[in-house]
Length: 494
Image (cartoon, rainbow, N blue to C red; front, side, top):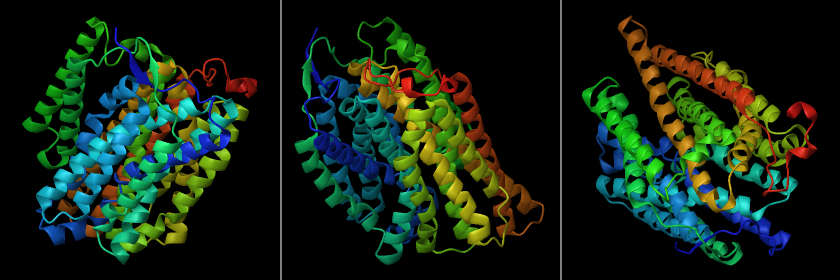
């Protein structure tokens, strides 16, 4: 058995100031990654005009990032457990920053897509281990709940901030800056991480990398993401889409069979027997499906129906970001400490469902104050409250030496749910729009009808996530093995 570096179970030797500085560094690094899943959306027309993308090829500015990001999350999380979370985090930051330079200065469509693929690799490394590092930094229940509130804002609010940043940078400068802005941030995060993150420790029996398992699950995820992101263009019942999905499912089945037999699996199957881990994955998939679709479709509604410019779309998302930040940083942790995990989870996801339901009734001549702002505020409050308990539930059952893998699982469920949900809801929207146009409806009104139906389905996804979380999560101590979070909870929370 080999000896490999990994993260300490807690950062007891660090001062409180250093631990919180480390948290801010981790959150800034992860925010940079999360931003890139949505910051590009508003700038796509400018990128297409400058680099000569065809309409079909333009989607690969987004898809190349999603493909490598989603495909390498689990592998990156396991590498964090084996090689050290700090080492994987800093390597990911370097890769992402270098790729951002390539994207920002790309003279051709091909180089931009290649840069986005490398960005996805670096992003997977950063995202897969950031949550694990935070869990190791904070063992006190109150501090951990507060720290997870910060991280929850990054995970949930990054999409809204990305739309805002994309609109502002594209409107005031050019699309190049949505990538180049990452460079000074990435350099600062790398220097700060080397100084404030706790050193990787040597832990015996950490095992070795399961190479066959890594190849199987990475290939399965990449094929599935490729099928999903291309489903709308190729057709969901086309031979290509069904073939890719079948191949992805087959590789996943082979992966599961192999993991059940190998001595040192990449993903120990017993992790899925942990109730909170399994339920959190389901909640994460449903919630991310609703969230990703909301960011994308809300931006389209504002641009194509209400006629907003890229800058105006970005500014329209400011209320969401502000409310989400307040609820994540000031409200969510207190609700968790007072009521436990389930009540704030259910309340937050229900608010998000109401937000999407309101948008499903948005009119063709809607005003921002009456038809847009209420949904923005509710979504911000719901997401800000819900993400903290989801993350705490997902990580609470896991042993410290497998926290990197658990972090990768959490991020994979969010990413796969977001990619699948966005593709399916956009397909639903497009099908509804086509049907309305064929029936003689005006194009703008037909597009609105498609958006309204997709928002309604997104609301159902968020509501189902609330029901699943409320019914099946089993609240239990969330501290670092012996430091219970929920002892302070009201009896009803149990």
